[in-house]
Amino acid sequence: MWTADHARPPEGVPIRFLAVRCLLGMVALWIGLCAGSLQAQDQAGATKFLGGSVRDTWGGAELRLELSHGVPWRVFTLTAPDRIVVDFGAVDWQGADPESLRRGDRISALRFGGFRLGMSRLVAVLDRPMAVEKAGLSVNTDNVNGGGAAELVLSLGNVDRAAFDASAGAPQDPRWDLPPAAAVRAAPKGPGPVVVMIDPGHGGIDPGAEADGVNEAGLVLAFAQELREVLLRAGGFEVVMTRDADTFVSLEGRVALAHAAGADVFISLHADSIDEGIARGAAIYTLAEKASDAASAALAERHDRDDLLAGIDLNGSDDRVARVLMDLARLDNAPRSRALAADLLAGIRSNLGEVHKRPLRQAGFSVLKAADIPSVLIELGFLSTAGELRNLQDSAWRERMSAGIRDGLQSWVQEDAALAGLRRQ
Image (cartoon, rainbow, N blue to C red; front, side, top):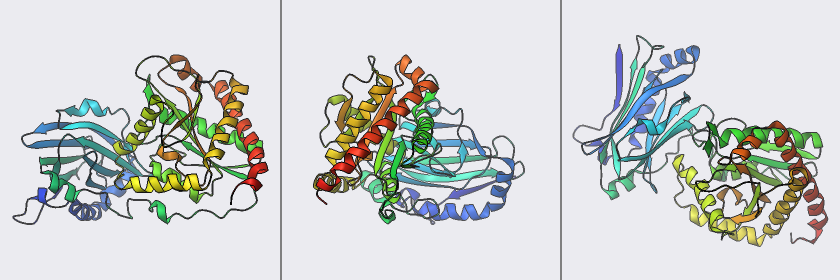
């Protein structure tokens, strides 16, 4: 038997004029009603994405997703750009191609994948303000483990700008969200090993650059795990990571995790691609309000846009960024980051030889804006260049790169300790 739980407005009130947040309570009710089927899901295996469609309709758009089981879910909207965001319990999206689902123009981009541990997310970028007119997930209770056992349908209708803006915003719900970054307290400092926060870029719903069926998120995670072992074997380092699985962590969340761990150093790892020409060799970025070149500025903008496409609400972040930049200058942290970058470059060169023709660069990467932690972003190579992709997949090359980063870190730690007494406290 098929059952359906549709989010409907009170009698006589169109849902398009209600805040989308109203759907959350109705979804919570659905979660309670379906607890039994969710338990069956846990026993039968992970929920799988089976197919779906995204199409234009008269006056709006429609999203249909077929899942192997019913899962908890919620829906909300965000602005700048206008987006519909759907959060789920864990869903296996393996083999799914977002672009193959789109049949129309009103959903201008679609992305889905892992979000946080035990969660998945779908983000649909809208070409105009639209609100959810109907949202429901139908569950086949007679065949919970069968194909197409659940179908989620979202019907969207056009609304004016004022109505969309009034209803938009990420809900604060402890059942789904991590604690806000401001609530995370830094670990106390004291004598001991140097705490290195390794940040494998992207992850989950944000795969990063892709080439030949390989994505950046997976490559840099594997490298980060190997680098962690190299540093631990060297001694003198404690290593923590912003993620240790294929999960999404926001840029702000990565910085908050570094503070929570009491990190002494923050190293973000990436492997980019370019659309035209050939690029090769590692490059190291430090924070600057003005980028050192147009390519660096474009790269930083693209990294920040990945957060938006993953459904992160960055409204109001400009004021926070301005305060962080002022703090960074006040604490004289920028010279420490530049010295760290120079020592890392020397270590990489001594172990690998070839690096990017302009290996030291600056840009406004949000992930580098921890005011009191020396921070760098290392582009390990370029997936768009065949030789670079082979390097990133070669264990011997990765071992030499890890050794270079280790050597650079060890040099910087000694130099920084010698200068510690000269810095303004």
